[in-house]
Length: 533
Ligand SMILES: Cc1cc2nc3c(=O)[nH]c(=O)nc-3n(C[C@H](O)[C@H](O)[C@H](O)COP(=O)(O)OP(=O)(O)OC[C@H]3O[C@@H](n4cnc5c(N)ncnc54)[C@H](O)[C@@H]3O)c2cc1C
Ligand SMILES: *[C@@H]1O[C@H](CO)[C@@H](O)[C@H](O)[C@H]1NC(C)=O
Ligand SMILES: *[C@@H]1O[C@H](CO)[C@@H](O)[C@H](O)[C@H]1NC(C)=O
Ligand SMILES: *[C@@H]1O[C@H](CO)[C@@H](O)[C@H](O)[C@H]1NC(C)=O
Ligand SMILES: *[C@@H]1O[C@H](CO)[C@@H](O)[C@H](O)[C@H]1NC(C)=O
Ligand SMILES: *[C@@H]1O[C@H](CO)[C@@H](O)[C@H](O)[C@H]1NC(C)=O
Ligand SMILES: *[C@@H]1O[C@H](CO)[C@@H](O)[C@H](O)[C@H]1NC(C)=O
Image (cartoon, rainbow, N blue to C red; front, side):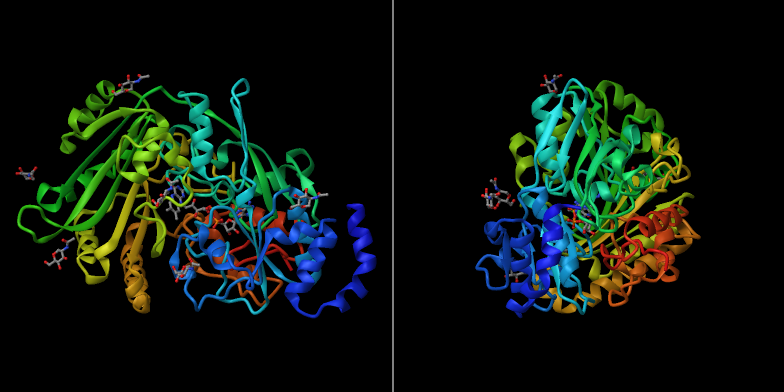
């Protein structure tokens, strides 16, 4: 316990009487707890001029930035760990809810919004805590949670063309939420999830203590590497094991429409992708388009790949394993690992490395109104069933929908399910991400699009993982169940339903850790791990 907290506890009762508004009490508490009256400069309240732009700054899903979404009492943007400690302390003291935001990419906006709270909440936005320190000798990096993946990748790439980190492709994603939920990208079949490559962390717990791997214990250190953000504390920084990549990788893309036999190609790929060497990453992005030939609506499947090696090695490999694809040299390019990331979100080459530093860069899946879901596929889906899915893409609501298939296998088959909380390992052929987007003017009809997504999900149920139907926690989906936010204790029985989907049997161990480190359930949101009663 910090001495200042003791002083504060004693002085608190009469200090409270001095101000009556919750927001003033909060500000007052912060300046006492941080021993610094200028901490107020780091706090945005509804009276602040830039409150909405700060709140909007990293919000990715515009469903949760509409005027009807409840907004936080205050947004705190700490510069130092002590500011985070003070925020945790004051929220607990004043009975305020706390939401932690790193990159704001949560699909359900859980880091900055809540549509179900009755109590006021505070957002702690880690945007200013984003240093990256690379140790080339050790092959490691310390990165603060508020950094984006792009900021991390930029520092790695500047240091060495042959170092990399196996995390997600979207470079505006925050390190904090991403690592908390697992995190996969274009080299995960070789190196595993981002969380699998975390070797230490600094966390602020419910008591405001700063803990490292040694002091937090292996159980808590296990839980924060994939158990989902916002349940165990606030992770300030992570120590990462960097990985080796060739100076040039090969990235290829080919698009086939239904008329070009896309269905049989995707059908074949289902039993091939997961068996390819670990150096290969392959996916299909499926969407509807107007055919360039006759202008009629059709479905196209865009094959994408990243290979840790040269074109001259990759082409024969694909020619042998998936000749139907007809991959040629013209479909491929060689470039550094960091350049493949930029191409992966911007679909353009020749952009400078600094593109990775742009926190507000727009990509087709970011900064829009959307609903998304995930699945895992363990048996190839028969061709007629794929055709049924394509018919769903012909429905009106699907004009801006995308369904992405990403091959699993590789090292994912070798890592035990219990190694980290992310349980989706051996036995998966590929994972599916479903996304439907709509425009601002269509948001009054958002239910229409969301219902389309739910129909597609129902349609897919016979063909995907069962008991539980698995889901990826970083693709947050409140349809699969949510905690009652007005019941502080949380309900284990209800949470078990969505908990098993995200974590399978690891859910029980997560509950045990939660019960030990935060029995009062201070760190909670609609899908946080509940403690046992
Ligand atoms: C455009 C886009 C592209 C994506 N691409 C990929 C991809 O390639 N691969 C992939 O695996 N995923 C991908 N995702 C999903 C992404 O990994 C998750 O949304 C991730 O949780 C986002 O982290 P964040 O810090 O940006 O989010 P936030 O919204 O800030 O946080 C997400 C959750 O973690 C909690 N949290 C945030 N910071 C901390 C912290 N420091 N300590 C404790 N809890 C914290 C939040 O409270 C919230 O519950 C993508 C998402 C989007 C929108
Ligand atoms: C108080 O906070 C301000 C702004 O956050 C900072 O610049 C200043 O150095 C802090 N002072 C002390 C004594 O910590
Ligand atoms: C925040 O986003 C919402 C919806 O996207 C928009 O209506 C609002 O004007 C934005 N506010 C600011 C200050 O950017
Ligand atoms: C599609 O498949 C059919 C039958 O297998 C074949 O005859 C045809 O040439 C293929 N079309 C294309 C564009 O590959
Ligand atoms: C596709 O065609 C339909 C009508 O056939 C049209 O309404 C729509 O705008 C077209 N879409 C694109 C992207 O061209
Ligand atoms: C990477 O590939 C590009 C394009 O083929 C080539 O110009 C460049 O020399 C290669 N770089 C290295 C380090 O191999
Ligand atoms: C970052 O990206 C946004 C959107 O793509 C763009 O408007 C802005 O100019 C970019 N900022 C910089 C510094 O390049």
